Image (cartoon, rainbow, N blue to C red; front, side, top):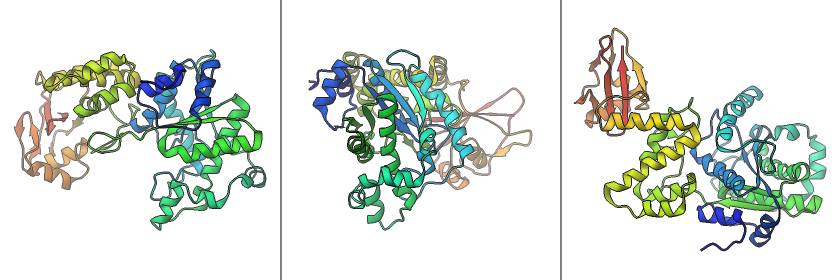
Length: 409
């Protein structure tokens, strides 16, 4: 049963996005009487976001679905410093050129999921480097510095955890929370932004921005965080044995993206359908009641819905077809990773690593010894086995039940 009256907070709560709100009653009342502008920040530290970021993108999508205006903040300025939250070491410094390239690469993902237009609830995409890089150091110290005490900054998890572990925290990282707080002040002044959203690890940064805006301009603004999303096995959402599940096609093929969702633990299907799709809650409840192999139908729907939202309908359809061909029909499918071994062939251990199934030749040897590798359905155990292909007759490579690829000439 929802505790809220506004469409915004009801939607966020019903879908499982709610963790903390700074002043729930006031935000609930505000969302009932006017269009609320809210933002989420994303530091462009890689050419693609991953599905851990998708949880935050969904907050903006829900904001827009409830009739409010989302702002995507690309952290071109804050990424020059690096958020210490959840990190055990200093982030790598990125060049201006790399940051610009990453931002250009990431933009397309938001354009698929959010609606960008001139309407009252049309999304905006803004780079905080537009104002952060123009700040003079003395100006920032005088105008913003007095509102932050070292005593309080030392209590935040992003700082305290690093210090408790006796791991270095650089002075530039220590300033990250000030820069992010300043973002909120600017966005409130220039865009009337009243809400910052983010993951639960951003609570301290969000509160800083709220307090800075109140102290300098006397404006009341709000914060909302979503829970840290973990899988039923306790692993952090967004990671697999092979690393991050990237949103961009260039970083991860559509089939692999689709397959990640298709392999969802039975216990997570309902939660992920609520968080990452727009399927009606009544339909999701029916899926949660399924038992045995019937739950696999819900997993396919989950994979299709998320892939369609992030990669497009064609990618979802192609990935599902490839999966059906691979697992049901015994074929190889069009979306599977492909490796050409040339006329001289390639040793099976090197093939496994080159196609991306294993991270090293050592891991490849272990998988071969375990009997997990098959070539055209036949087990291969010898790491020195030479894989050769004749023209026009490709071979299917499998590692376990979930990894499949095509070996060509």
